[in-house]
Length: 330
Image (spheres, rainbow, N blue to C red):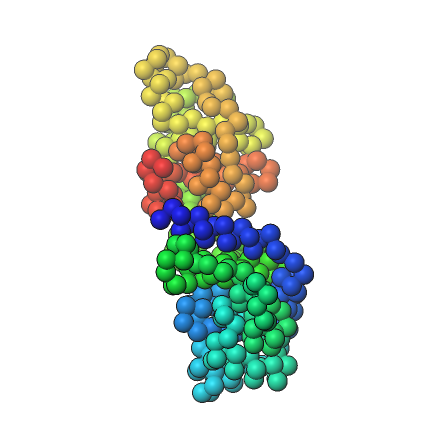
């Protein structure tokens, strides 16, 4: 098992060392296609078809319109999907798959740009039919599959083809300045969508609503009395200075330690007992930023502040656990 994984990893490393102008040209064609309101149509047969479908899905998720097209179905009506502003990615490891080559030949006559992902020239082998029909050839370069040739099932070759597709898709998205917000708009559901949501959307305790906020000069007793007016309060009090900026946090754990140490300390001002300058998130933070802060600092409550440092809300770790973004002891 380890040998198979190492073989596939080595195959990807080798193609990474061979990135050249052809790869840049492929990205150029995809970006130009998207800018012209075109579609990247991806076609392959068998396992190459499965890889092509994944590449198409990756492109679409990164804001580049794309569809997978079966090469046989194309000859039976699906050629109507192809337009002059489109780009085609054809996959065939041998470069001789009849259905894929026939499709490429037809599209070549229609002057559609063709990007092929194929084995490439190996050991002075002749250029494949698909490569000859293509404007850009992205060679996989894999001769032997994982498993030291014990089996002929496509393994390393399909892994590398997929990695090449992912690489050009990511490069094209970066070229088009595709953002996290753009990605979230296309992935609103599931854990991935939740991680890209603004952290403030996850907050249950908000300033001016149900989030107790004390002043530094308030005594602990006064602050707790005021906080008790909130029916369902968080596990921490936020503390501000006279300018309204966050200056500290006082948690339930802090209160327990204070009472057990010396109950008379309840008369002390908040500035003397609070944790000063707590770590915060700004109002533009995503849920993924909150998850990262929780995992790194084990903070159970994370204040969210505006551009002036004034508290907007308090994100409780239980909110992240409820969304299944973190586990209780992750």
